[in-house]
Amino acid sequence: MTLKSSNTVWHRATVTRERRAELNQHESVLLWFTGLSGSGKSTLAHALEERLYQMRYHTFVLDGDNVRHGLCGDLGFSEEDRVENIRRVGELGKLFVEAGVIVLTAFISPFEADRQRARELLGSDFVEIYCDCPVNVCEERDVKGLYRRARAGEIKHFTGISSPYEPPKNADLYINTAGKEVSECVDELLAYLEKRGVYPKK
Image 1 (cartoon, rainbow, N blue to C red):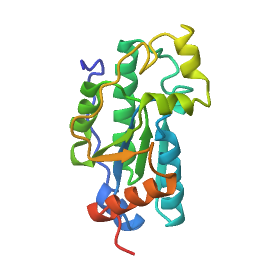
Image 2: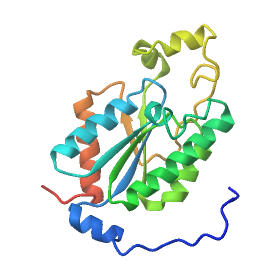
Image 3: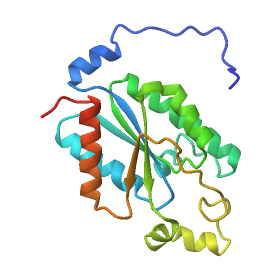
Image 4: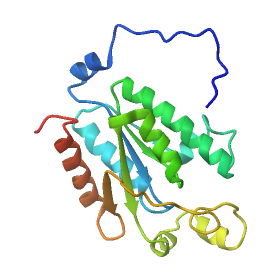
């Protein structure tokens, strides 16, 4: 990316990420949920956030649809716009991590290269979680009617139908959202975060 801003200097704050972690009593991290529409990304992200909130941890969910109502409201669904959408989310997620928050993102993010750029941006703070669910199961869950409309040609560039999805090659965590209850998936995610040291063992 070519920077258009000039004559800018990064200001180093006295309230550091380390001090925020000490205050919050937990580390910050970005949990990147990826998968097809209907695979359970948003459901899992919000269910996990609820559990973490009950544990009194600082969290925030960046949801794909919600972000497109504001920050990315000027973007469509062409390949170029999808790339920019994920770039912005990666940068925003990095700011949340610096703020000491456990941030959860729920985006289809269909292209491996885009997810890899986010990983390179955040380094070890980036945790890729693949919500693995067959397209036929996603279609059965189609509460928004998007697959039906995509197959009817009413929605262009729809991932899994008229636009490709590139499954993660080396996700940090694979969640079988077709064969497990939401509570089971959340327990699996919490166990991962505890093992990783994001928060102390209870």
